[in-house]
Image 1: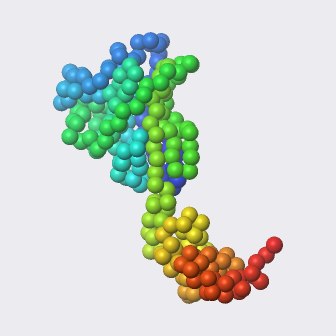
Image 2: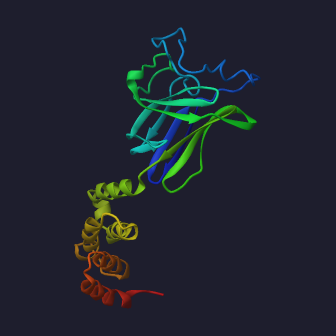
Image 3: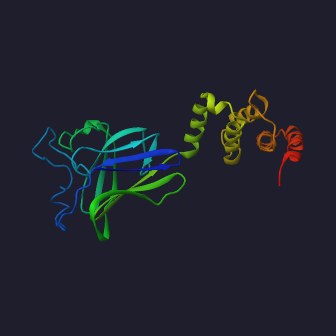
Length: 250
């Protein structure tokens, strides 16, 4: 048994799976041990089952927020993960049913998403099946299954700015986050730097300075001033900066 996880932006992605070995069967895995397409495995209720994408119980993949898989949206949640293999292409299946043993009880009515990806060849043999994250950016990563001499990649991406703003809103309802001017300033400055959610960002900037837990200092005042300038309130912004500049350290 194994698991691998990674944060893409602030979204947690976790895969739980079992790792079969090649065990001397090189050249006999794909299309034989792992059947191609959807097949009747002569067990369970499914008459057209994909591969379980591992061994034993369901391989599962869990997302803490909405993601895009190869450009197609998928809601937050935990999914059973299956693969309908082919020699050149594979169909990845994300099923809402995630507690089965293998794919013997697979039912397409539980599908949340299917996407098609290329099957890539590897130069060296991977003895034990593994899942791995690579090609990371601030808002995407490629999750790949690797086994024997095959790699099956899947690009996962997130709307980082949208998710971050939603996270700020949730956190502001918690006492710990609200009670520190730094948190309000950080959220306001995120809006300023990324030029998004400016009206709400301006209210956060105001709260970082003028509420009970607010504090007028260089960081909070300069973020506040920057957001005021976004609304052409330059006179007010200049007034805040006159207060802020003497507070700045080298």
